[in-house]
Length: 367
Image 1 (cartoon, rainbow, N blue to C red):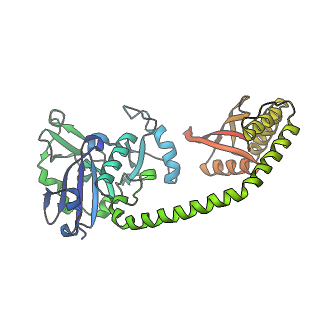
Image 2: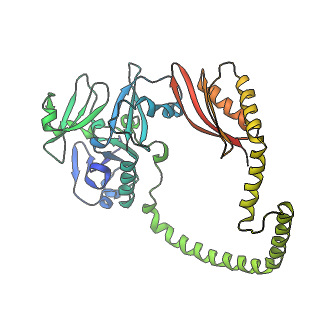
């Protein structure tokens, strides 16, 4: 059985509070993080542990769809359950329960960033990130344990797999309360924690660069020398090509003035040309007619598609469209057909309402 090291973080993920490793019993490590990671400790995997106050979990009913699609609608499903709604909250899909429900978690982006920075500064590349109360065993009743750092602080794992952290005044309403030894970290396995990992999406486990800095030092010096050689060659090449570049610039300016004789002052030739062409298209109503026709034709190609809303932004020559589908796969095919027609399509998000999937889309002509 592999030996696990647990790094407990403070509220907000700003600092490391204490480190624990399992060797037949739960043992607290009093050294530095670097010593904790030393080969002498024999630790095979590092588990970073967030304070339960920073992690909200729920056991909810979810539709039987792929996880990537489920994450798109999860913020809407949890909107009524969250006390505070963050624009950039991090969501994670955790373990599946026997009754068909799914354990899900939400952590603020600020806490995730603070945690990532704290671990990186200490050279720790954690295999998993777990809420402290999820280390408790799930039982048929509430499992409550007093924590390491504070006699008045307790963590609780509920029977549905979710949990929370609370002070003694609140937790006194629940019994029984177990001693810290009941946390039983020496009996926890890496496999049992995999399905509770918060490191998903943009926070998925990467490489701890700080741990490899000694090996990168010589490579950095060599790269610097190569950069100097490359810069010198580029400078010489630029000198040789300067005359040709000046001639090409003069020819381009002449073509621009010939195409737009009313323009007397050139500031940014590329931007001015793009704006003038776009204005000409919009004034003729070309963008409106072209995009709207493609939208109606594409909707007609799907028996289960319904055009719920349509709005045209004259200044940007773009449409904002709400389309509902019977299944998620139709949404992907719909977007692909629009792009195949040469349109620039941006998906704003998807949600479920009354058994249908509603997708918000921004559409404009490809530039």
